[in-house]
Image (cartoon, rainbow, N blue to C red):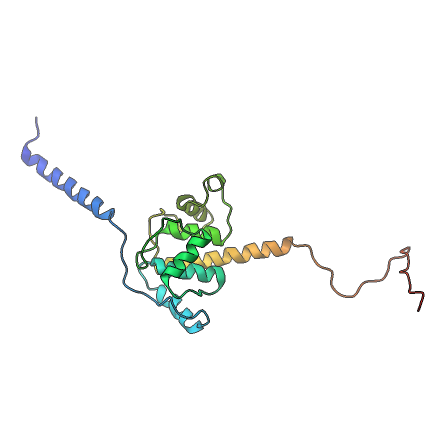
Amino acid sequence: MNPTRASLRPRSSVLRVLALAAALGGCARTTLTPGPRTGYAPTDAVEDVEFWHALAERAAVSNDEALHGLIVLEAGADPHGSYAQRVAHARERGWIGDDWNERALTAARRGTIARALLRILDIEGGVMLRALGPTERYALRELVYLRIIPASTDNQTLSGAEFLGVIGRAQDHIALAQLAADRARPARPSGPPGPVPAGTPAAATDPGT
């Protein structure tokens, strides 16, 4: 029995709804409202605490907030007073490509954050990363493997709380890498020299003494 036009209506309506949902899902990422201030002086500890505290409440982290946080992770403070300066810093460090031109209030992608973290943490990665360089996709896969970023796709965003968790795990990675480097470094002798072993030639004396 052939389907009637009436029997096709519900199905085609569903298909139209699904197509519309897919189209909406493929639109540009959310443009966020302004969040915590990022242009404060690098020596202002109060503003720094307020930035991280306010960021925890954000539904998503903007590009400006993400770059500010990543620079603080890298250098301990962000000396840049504008988003343009942060983008220039990120481009110089290889965190983003030359063609990257996203707006300050656009929600930051996990791929962008992962590529920056790969550089900051000096992670060499596997065969694909060494062959292709720090692409966003493989940078994210490496950081998911290291459990620094939750499993996700490179186009997903991060909430403020998730970003704080990522920064905390990145700090732990830096501390563990430093500890391993310290342990691998040869120990330096300390304290006064011990007694000269028997049979060791005595040190030459100054004939004038």
